[in-house]
Image 1 (cartoon, helix red, strand yellow):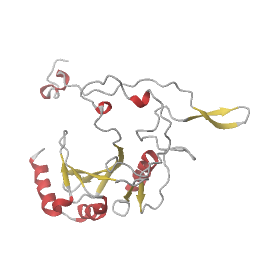
Image 2 (cartoon, helix red, strand yellow):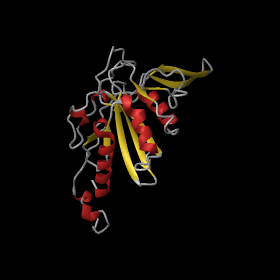
Image 3 (tube, one colour):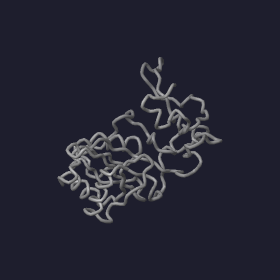
Length: 234
């Protein structure tokens, strides 16, 4: 973390105190967690206070931490089993549980301060509610509109106060949320043109499940710092 960002972290600590909890980063990015009931107040201050001036929302993304920390999440070396949900087709389409683990679903906000040349990430957990719900930040950053619709479509996260929360990527009548970890990788149905019916129709998926091996983070000499400037021979 550079001295500039450490100075920003100090200002954030002075302004927000214990409302924001700093998260350790392996990539040098300044990230904070906060309770969802504090999101709008914090977001508004980060936007309006000239000390921060985070006037631009770069992205909003959902995260499903189901089975987080288990072998399938390991990326430092290949796992022996690959991604199990690519092998075993789970029948889950909609999770009817009364509640979720409080840290299963999260929403991450990527902020940019053009004036100060800073980037910042905020992470909010949706809590135990089913369906998961967090406040909409559309009134703070209008760019959140489609980002929140995407997170709703892919993860089933609801954004309270959103003016038009509906699917934006999946088909009309689609059931389930494809980026949830319990949604089958091969899907549940496929679409084809039915000559007898004279229209496009759904049918059970015909794709054969296969093992997928997670991407491995490599640390060989191609990634050494002294070779990144082109000084290497390769």
